Length: 350
Ligand code: TXA
Ligand code: MG
Image 1 (spheres, rainbow, N blue to C red):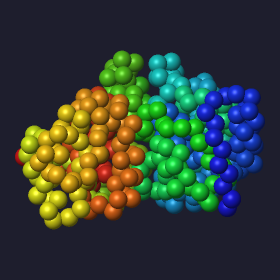
Image 2 (cartoon, rainbow, N blue to C red):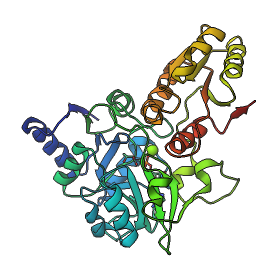
Image 3 (spheres, rainbow, N blue to C red):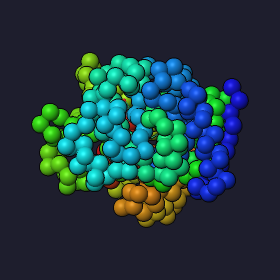
């Protein structure tokens, strides 16, 4: 397949011509990679079963893992799902933005899009290019993250060019993703309480400001037990896994640096380091490849950098990658959830 690459950084008259062509591809049942504020999405018409099926093929995605449908206005959810009060409270507080809500699906969303589940995930992105593309298409756009299944979600145009060239009709380069981790996903329970299925920029505290009862699904922090059923099919796959083995270090920086030094004598090692720790690690473990990870408490910067670091680590053919264990609270919960999976739950404590 021939993939057209275009760059759209604003909604100028020139850009609108390109966006109209992208929308035309979506309407005809084709695939378009587009930027959002979280990560890049691989989009197709969510109401077209054949188009949705093409997404699974392009990504190599298991067909039992449902897609998120993207809408241009929060109230459009009513056309494709059965909404409720809690949805609109969430929408008023956080949409457009990095929040996805699971709702009962209407018939117009085919089983191919929602992996035959009775529900569908809905998100109204904030990114102006994404919203305009959905609006011009006139249909909801089904879009998973635009990576090959199993590799980190793309947050830069070069990531999607690497993964999706030859697999999609068009790639829209919209610059770097602002946040860099995928949206927060919640399910609304019968009594109006929420269950967090995937943590993101909208934190548990944010959700609690709108809806007092918020549970955190076990799979957010912990490994699934053998045979355990999941609330969100995506949680059962080993995600975000680089080729190098990843280990999370839960110890003071001197012990961590010493541990990294010892391993660096045995194999090819890199370390993800907070700014405050750079000197210690450089001193104690000379020659180890270092990825700077922003200041210790600067979780926004860390979220922005994580997937790019994991992709780069893949290219470097490392054996082992060491990173500090993030806190499992606030914004840190989103980092914790992604990093613990990349590390296949390997935490080294001292
Ligand atoms: O930020 C994002 O959410 C990005 C951008 C492109 O919008 N999209 C994204 O999609 O991360 P994806 O497919 O990579 O992740 C969607 C997750 C999967 O884990 C899937 O299992 C879950 O949402 N999901 C989708 N529909 C669901 C449903 N009806 N019930 C429970 N989980 C669902
Ligand atoms: Mg994904």
